[in-house]
Image (cartoon, rainbow, N blue to C red; front, side):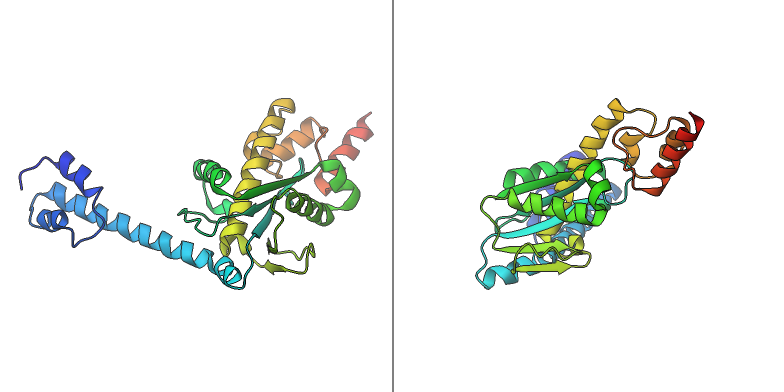
Length: 261
């Protein structure tokens, strides 16, 4: 075969099996460049096969619940329990039964570009999405655990149609009788994983906006978590209007600056 490597690369991108006549033809090409293309093609197939298997695994709960007759299965997850500033955000997502997007996983295991791309796909393909945002002042009033439950309930109440079964990451919500709490649910359920992505991207974008309003804490990078730059900001600037006053490092910074007055 005498075709240029660039043409072979383009043709191989359309091949899906080693049994394909063109792939078999390439196997007889002794050029090193073609050998490298064949290796990379096999690696691509292996990766795609793993992602397809992961998708089936991630849909196991939804698949079983659909067999039981449930039609609108919501996955729920939250982001932002640990930060020293900003809201806690929950998302609830109902997916169509034929949802088959590869690469969905716990949002913490995805880079920002991948999360943003999947965020757009989920928004486009989901049957319904609900978002609950509980601000820092409410967190201070009721505690972060209760605030998280409020955010989850708010997200569920935004769904239309209403869910007839709810899959929740980690914490029991008791929103309805038909629910299941899954430890590390964002790695086990496609619906919870999608909710994790929606919640994460939503909250990150809120914190990026807050970074412009309250510079000096590096919110754009730490999203309100207690990193070195954030703690340095607390030490040198003090607290800002979105800090959680019930969290220890914020309490200490507030007390420190009050003593200086």
